Image (cartoon, rainbow, N blue to C red):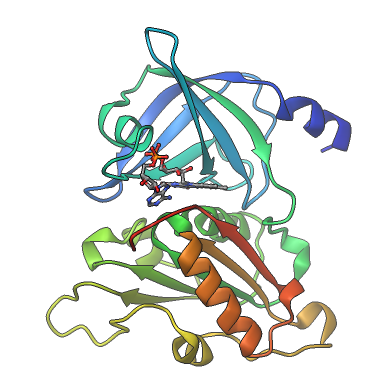
Length: 252
Ligand SMILES: Cc1cc2nc3c(=O)[nH]c(=O)nc-3n(C[C@H](O)[C@H](O)[C@H](O)COP(=O)(O)OP(=O)(O)OC[C@H]3O[C@@H](n4cnc5c(N)ncnc54)[C@H](O)[C@@H]3O)c2cc1C
């Protein structure tokens, strides 16, 4: 994509029509958006969504792109109980509803098949959304780069894309941490992500190994991202090899 074309689109609001709606969990759903004029996106990017009420009141929020490059645009939204925008997107939006979308946005929290490095993906809650785009993008590109996804959720029922992650392709390991409740017999992690957990799960840091040096993508509520990114740096990951995306406040 030419840089000028991307810059031009960033300020342009496009009309999006809600297509298929997929209930991912009791609190999260994926909305496929039909956007005439959408020029495509890269894995890890996000969009701004703008809603307009009948009285003209507008609200705008950022949402990561859930679909792979080459797939139609999709977002996955998790309900924030006292929120303004997410309750409408997760409870009210129906196929045929209209909203506006601006993007794609982001050039740093982006994955390209040519990067080559083993990937450590760390997600807290809906932070898994852009990482799902990375996983799907990896498959579509035929990449065999090894991936470990460490995914923190409150409970098994809160795991977004659970069936898809259970069927992860060769070379992709998914490690769950369930912070609030665990099913009977759960043998996995049952606490928040911390340095000890990352020491067990993450690829060993290999500073100076060039393109084969592990690359980390950390995404979720701000507190989750700061804890996980600091732990990776403590474990020897150079800060430039830890890419972060913060979703904002959370009681998680
Ligand atoms: C780059 C980027 C990408 C994002 N991608 C996604 C995504 O893929 N899926 C997704 O569900 N959300 C995502 N978010 C968060 C999203 O933009 C909204 O902040 C979220 O949906 C809450 O909006 P709201 O209008 O419902 O709540 P608001 O009315 O904005 O907030 C209501 C209350 O919830 C708290 N709050 C705000 N944001 C969050 C949050 N993220 N988690 C918990 N509490 C919060 C506020 O402090 C406030 O107390 C992303 C944010 C950023 C910056």
